[in-house]
Structures are given as structure tokens and as C-alpha cells.
Image (tube, rainbow, N blue to C red; front, top):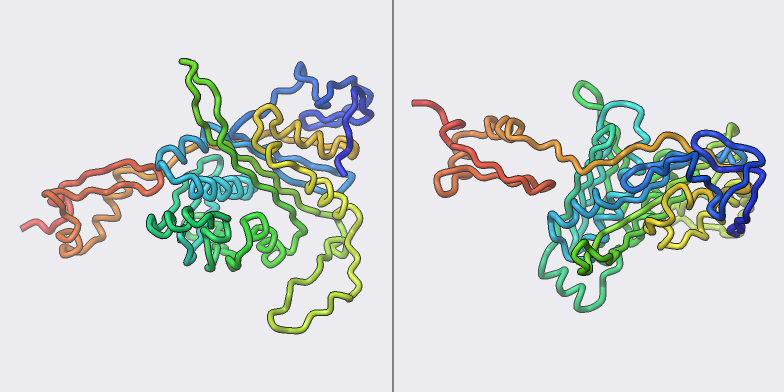
Length: 354
């Protein structure tokens, strides 16, 4: 259902405004009057004619730094990359100082994924996996997301900081991919019609010395249907456990939401990761006939919040026995799971003084 672009359009995509009768290129955007967000920036958008709002992003150097730091096997890197994209799309919607935390716990070869987004723009992430089980899964070509994750739970947590109560949504990991799991989360927790697309790719480019250089890229889009009338937001009910279902029940989906989903379904995975497309061009391709408005982009940085002082604070709460158990070669060594920074401490700092 993708609309074809031409050389002119009545409604023009622009930064925060719709323009009328402006000659445009085949992308619909005049580069002399708009600065593209580029990599590592989340672009909020609105399609007023369809009562839709959302965010789009392409991650490049930030993602590459996170994944290369840990040197994950490729299937694990791809899985964590999608989790990072989903987290930054959701985390950048927070209107207050705080954290948005994605954490999965499951029984698959990749039994834990953690992505921590700290407002306004800091992200860190890591994955835990069983090397033997992962090697076996790769050898048997069982590397689909649902096979690597297995069964378990995904917790999506909003933390507004000290003296506030955390909000946490839990969704089952039931053999679906992260796109479907995210949609289920919104249906269960927020009851907002939501569509999500995620994609990861490893591109090969020539470096300054002419040799091929691999680079991780990922992209994603989330769009939500937010009409004034709640009746228009009605969605088909989720299956009620073991209760019998009647697929013949009448269900009328709003035409605008049906159009949004049909357009989003036309997105090719490569469009989400191709640096020549970018978030804005993709949005124009999707919604130019309806008119799409974008807002200031939010930069995303690879930024871990660990510090020597924070770790020392944790160690100071250990008992003398726990400190003794932590000593190796006369010192206490701690490595941050997120950024791999290594810290060393003198045990005498934490043991009782005689």
C-alpha cells in the first residue's frame, strides 16, 4: 500500500511544519532547508490526518561501540541490538528525569538481555548467554530470536528515581519475536494500538586504508493510534487462556489505524538500517500523502553510569566475610557488565579497622 513519490507534492515533509506547493526531490525533502537527524538520533513524528504519533531511529556508531566492546557472537549481537532499538524508542518518550529498563529472563541460550536508558539520552546494554548451548544452537541452525530467548518474562520498568514508586510491565516470552512482544505489551499494559518495526544489519564498508570494515547498524519505528475518541482505539481481544474463542465475532477496526498498519507493513528491513534512507526519508515514503510532521530529534549516546565511587559504595555494604570472599591476589577486582570498565580496590578500605 506504499504510495509512490513524484517530483512535486501538495503536502511537504519538513521540520516541525507542513508546507504547501513546494517543489521537492524524489525524497520529498529539500536538503537546503532541513538538517537531517542522521545516526543515533530518535525522530518523533506526527501524522495528524491519521491521528498517529510515533518515533523513528537509526543507530550507527553508538550501537557499534556497544556491541564491539563485548565481542558477542553474531546471533547474540543481533538480538541485543533489537532490544537496544526498542528501548531507545520507548525511553526517549519519557517526559521526566529517570530510567527506562528492558530486562528479559528466560530459559534459552541467551538467558538475559538488559538495556538501561537514562534520560535524556544515555544508553547501556549487555547480554548473558551460555556458550555451549549457543554453539549447539548455531550448529543446528536454531538462531531465530524465539529459539535463542526461549520461554520466560520480559520486564519493562520506568524508574523516576528516589522517593518514587517504580512502574513495571511484565509480558510473557512465549515464542514470539521482540516486535510481537512489544505489541503485546502495549495491548496489555497501555491498551494503545501500537505497531513496531525493528531491524539489524552488519554493513561492510571500505576503511581509510581501503580494507573492508564491518559496522553494526540497526533501526526501528514505533507508531501509535491516539484518536480523541477511545471507541476508535478498540482492538481485537487477546486470547482468553483456555477459554473457547469465537473467531466469527464481529470486529470493526478503525479505518485510519488499518491504513497505518498497512503502510508500516510495507517497510523493508533494509530501509530501517540503510544510512542513505534515514529516519526522515522513511517517514516521507510512508506518509507523504497524509502529511507527516517531525519534531526535534533526541540524540542517543553510549554512556554508562558506573563509577568507582558507586562500586565502592556497594562494597562498603558488604560484611567482613563477604569482603574476604571477594579478595583475589590481594585485591578486589570488579568489571562493569555494561561497559567492561575494570576497577580494583584495596580490601583494607572495607575491612574493620583493628
